[in-house]
Length: 507
Image (cartoon, rainbow, N blue to C red):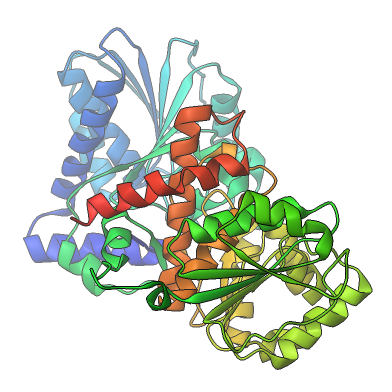
């Protein structure tokens, strides 16, 4: 599913109007009907609704919605804010329809003084003040209205985007001037801002409202941002031939673990083996050998020269993919061994955890990594590579710059993990849940990714598929264990079910 910047969304609206030879007011009416269908499924006619409409097309959507809901028997009080005496043409047309008198609607047009209505916990407020075209923070009277909405006990539903929130970059926005919605009903497609952690208090739970924008225009309009979808991921799976053997599914090398951190090796190894690799070798210190051989008997172990930590770079030539990092620690000997491995390795790498922390002090190596390599940082690990970031948007911008400058793929982990390609394209993952915010979860992802790369999947496909199946396994585990009790081991244990679920979608 494509995610477009706000300017492109306006172009999609215009293309739909032109291609269907319909008036813009008719497209607005279509959107209002789709919104009404969603809202009337959530609340019955006993619920009092208060609509706050601005002077633009977002306000026009709110006015049309109020009229349609009143026709279904809902009690609606509408406040249209028109301090400049200028409405968009479609907002004006819907204002005129309400002003003529619609049964069930109490209509107020605010040009000067606003006397706020009493809002209770029983009320639903529909926020239609400003849409995604906003390009500066709200101030003055509109900011005061937003503060009043946010201070009320009412449930808040925002049309398309919470008023005051910008569609992409909110670095210089004013948080006090943004509506805190409980539900956001986005028209046709999501906004990039919905995927950033700091915007969750504004967006709340979001849903997509299909208003039948031109499919041809959506397909033909390019964007660097996309949300992964079930069918697309299922289509990436490669069927296995009846006469296949383990050599067909790659040899993978995992360099992981140190004293007290054997669990990282175990989790990554289990995930790798549960993701189809033909043969896995785990390079580890002697202190972890019996633990890994007992916990993951299917893996071959290769001992480091040290009993306690990674100190000796292994030969990587015989492997199709190599993963380094889980549980390594940041000892100086480990740092030297990592740099030696990076100097010699010509095999695509997955670098995670402590390997990334060590790279933070050796950034010159980033541009020397083998083609097809992947970094898998969480936000703090990324900032050790690119510097401090003020918010998720800036972090994404810097991650894209890093991917483009180094030719690497980056998996920036989070609630909507971003897979970033060397061309700057970003794929966001929708699977997963808060229960996955637990130690070892990233090690499981590393193991899955290592397995797919060893099997010969294209790096971008491997990164997208690994991230998606990791989240899907987490969702399976959450249904079994709940998001409080989940562990990373639960995620690894649920991989077989997740793979079967995805395979069945492709049948």
